[in-house]
Amino acid sequence: MKRGKVLLYTKAKLKAEEARIRRIEEIYKKYGKILIAETYKNYIREYAIAEDIVQTAFERAIKHGYNFLELEDVEAFRLLYSIMKHEAYKVLKKRKMDYLIVSIDNILDNLVYTDIKQEHNPEFLHLERVMVHEAIAKLPEDYASVLYLHYFYGYKFKEIAVLLDISENTAIQRNHYIRKKLKEILKREGF
Image (cartoon, rainbow, N blue to C red; front, side, top):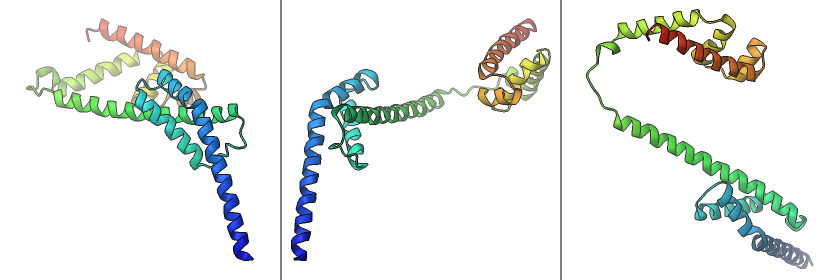
C-alpha cells in the first residue's frame, strides 16, 4: 500500500513538472525572440550575446522556482524582461571593467620613460602645489570647501551636501564654478 502511494505521488509530481516545462517552452516560443530583439536593440549589439542573456534569464527564472503555470503571459513576460535587463547590465558592467583594465594596461605599456626634466623635479612640484593652495585661498570660502572636500578628501557630492547643509545639485554647481574660477586665477598667475 505504501509503495502505491509513493509511486502515485511521484507520477503526480512528474506530471506537474512536465506541465511546468511545457509552459516554459510555450513562453519561450512566444516571447524568446522578442526578448532577444529587445536585448540586442537596447543593451548588447551582438546577437549571440543577446541570445545568451535571454537564455540565462530563463535559466534564472527556472532555478529560482517561478511557477509559470500560475502566471499570465504578460506577467511572465514582465518577469523575464526584468531578469533579462538585470543580466544585460551585468554583462555591460563586466565589459566596462574589462575595457578599463585593458585601457590602463595599454597606457602603462605605451609609457615612454624619458629623463626627468627640470620642471618635474621635487622642488618644482612643491612650488606648483603651493601656488595651487594660494590660488584656492583666494577663492570664496564656502565654495572652496566643496573643492577641498571633493578633491582632497574624496567626499562624494551627496556627502558634501549633507556636511554643508546644501543640496547635492548646489554642491555640484559650486564645484563647477570654483574649478572655473581656479583656472582663471592660475592662468592670470602664469601657471
